[in-house]
Image 1 (cartoon, one colour):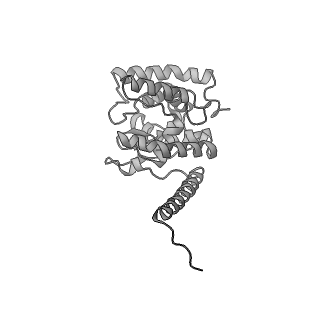
Image 2 (tube, one colour):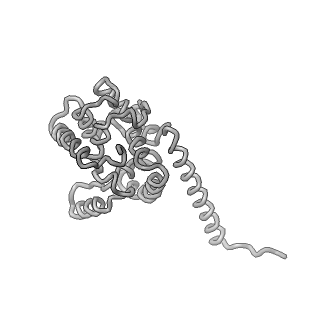
Image 3 (cartoon, helix red, strand yellow):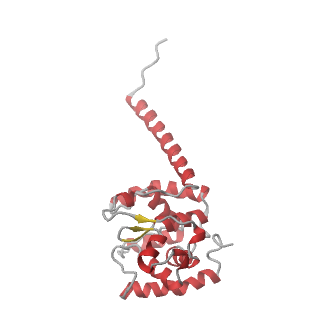
Length: 233
């Protein structure tokens, strides 16, 4: 019996479906591997013309001040949401539609997914990235959990020119381990993103200095209100 020849559309759909299955399987496997293995590099590191100095450290060897500074500055609801802060996203969309400075509503989980698995991008490529970013955020929230997400984020985030992760940043700016950062030092490091190549950490002035002081003051609020409860039980 001669098998009927499939149409070009049917062949395309079949190829697309198989490609999707392979993509889902590979991304799932990669997320599971990075649940236990330090992330060796990222696209951002690979394409950084200044190189990529980094030194992976477990969460237990990173100062709680640094963890609380990140929560205070970037995602106060980190321990409450499941990867997406819908309220922050809605506010960002309204601000952007009203002609305000273009800003996102990304959580620490979304930033981790972007930094580890995807690209930074600008313009329209940023919006193309949102689809896989949603998928990877869902996966790491499901299989990593909050402590691992925070650990990975603090080890891959850009902290200066050719510098990635909290430990490399602490050594660069303060000549000490990230385990020993004070509130002020942790706050200054976290005041530099999202422009760590342009904003000074040591000797910061103007907006960066004021922002760092604000973060430092909020570190105590994070601890007092238990906003870090998913990290420190």
